[in-house]
Image (cartoon, chains in turn red, green):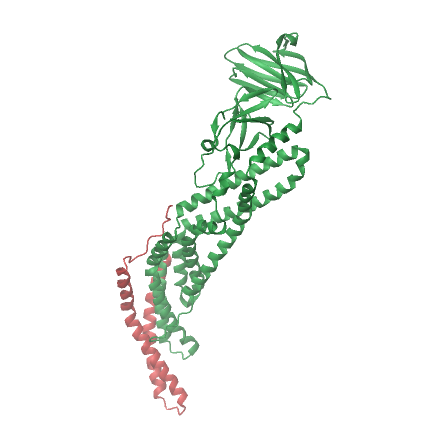
Length: 90
Length: 460
């Protein structure tokens, strides 16, 4: 169970870090986009940063819903959980 | 279940790692390309995790449709391994018997070669049996481990996990189909049963093995003998006598000793009709009345004492310890090349051996005599001193043995036996290797399907 607890801990940490990073890159992206730099390519970098950050935020929000959806569909297949790993005697 | 939880949570972790990479304020496109891959992998792993039991049930339905059955397959494997070991014992004995006959001794090389091939076939079957027990009993463990490996982020162990899953799935479904596969390779299995060979251990009533001697076969039409016994194993090719009643005697020193095979039919002895073709069947033989035989000297007793032990048996000196609750008759049958110099019971000489002479007999090309001594109740030590005439023969001439064996072999369906041995030697080795490589390539293909790069270009 230690590995499972470790992974759960990592998941919660990753969610928190992802939210914070979303805010950070959103701000940086808008900052680059709005900076008075004449080169267009630099502004495109800002644009891509904003886009990816918004995608990230979208997936954070939607991810849990999708996982629940997959579980719901698989319960309709008859077995929500697979058979426990016990040997099948001939 | 533990592995399932690990895979489940790893999939969720992969998803959030992908999301985190999307949110990183680093505009490196090589890094950002991982984000959609990780998200897609997470969904794929989730779906696989929840669908795996349906896939397994489908594969089991497919297996029963194709006619595979694990219980039958495992028992077939065990029976085949057992049969090949018996065949090795049988061939070792044939080797010994043939090396005794001087004009057939060249065949030992060929028999050794055949034995090497049968050993290789035995190895192949043992390896296959080991793989099948591994897959059978660790099936779900392998599947869950494969799923957990596939769920690791960044596709580190994805191909390994996919291979484990497909290996377990393919081998679990397809291994029992090895039996119809071999049936396709060879024309039939039933032909082997027409050439039954009976063999077995020869023991006396004290459960001691009788290492050498001769046996004779009586069938309703006549008598075939002497057939040699080698290293306490006898061999009788009994193809001609499938429907007849047989009696086997232990034929030494002018006497035909009864054995437990008396008016028996082959089919009842070999219990044919089981799933394994009984080309060889083992029937152990107990000789009634005989104590020991060696080079023209036979010791027998009537009634058989409760304890008898021949501690020394050479052509000059015999020492026997006996213990009996009733008085019994101790018989010494010797060919004319021997003469008894003295006979002592418990150290005391019994006097002139001529007083104990019972009768004369003729055994193939030899003559001999039988002496009878009554042994009283209790424990006694019997010592016999003999003189051996170096010029006379002690055992029947080889020509009788050769005639008896060619008579029996003439009735054997030799091509059928050769087919059976060829099948054992080559088709089993080739079939096992071929089938295993076939299954491995199928599982590699399935692994490529499961673990291949998923390019879902719908929204990402």
